Each structure stands twice: as structure tokens, then as C-alpha cells.
Length: 162
Image (cartoon, rainbow, N blue to C red; front, side, top):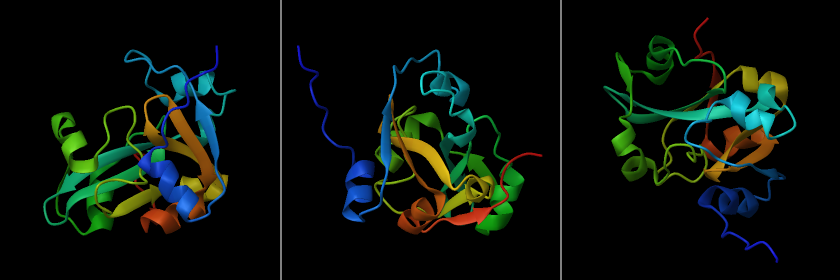
């Protein structure tokens, strides 16, 4: 029996509209296995290229997006400083879908409801290509870090805990 083709996500549509080369990866998503290493174990061990998308709220800017290596932690003080905020806290999970249009485990930095200020950890530049969520649980896309930054108007900064 043929697999049913799923509709394209906003993230993939946007990447295709900009004619940016990308590669799709699918994997079995589970509520109990959401870490980058869990995902990488299903994607031929690409853990060092997997970046997660986090959404925070700054006291001056409102929602901001952080794209960091999957196994790292965001440093909220660094994020506040680079984003021009005095204080930054993580967006409550219950507000994620309403704010971004995405749900936990499928939040892509590309194709959110609005283009929020986006900060990509500088380690992405060192890797050249990175893997981020493509906007659906179980779907990732690999693309050049510079291309991602162009699409989301992102800045490369140091935002992970040392």
C-alpha cells in the first residue's frame, strides 16, 4: 500500500518559494523521545547538526526565537542582552501554538505566524548545514545555516550556556 503524502508545512513552502536547497528527514515522533540525540538516532547519527527552536518572551520586544544546538541549553541572560531586553523568559508551552502556529516538537524557526526577532547560535556557522524542524512532529529539514538566517532575518550570536 502506498504511503499517504502529507501536505507541505509552512516552513517547507517558504523555503521552496525562496528556492533554497534543502533535504527532508522524517522520523517516528514520540512524546517520550524528544531530545536531539533521540531524533538523531533515527537520522543516521546527525546529532551535531540538529538545532532546536525555542521561543522566549522579552520584556521589551515580546516573542523572540532562539535556534540552538539540540543538546545545549539557552542562556537567557545572553539572549536578553543580544535582543535588547533586560529580562527574557521562556514562552509558556500553552501559548506556543497561538503565538507561532506550531506545537511542541514541531516548532520551526521558518514560517511562524509572524517574523519574530531570531537569534541563531554562532555554532551554526561552523557547521555550514544544520537541521531544524520543518514544522511538523517527525519532520526535519537540512539547509545551509546562512540560508536559514536570510529567510528568518536571523543573527548569529553566542546564546548557549557555557
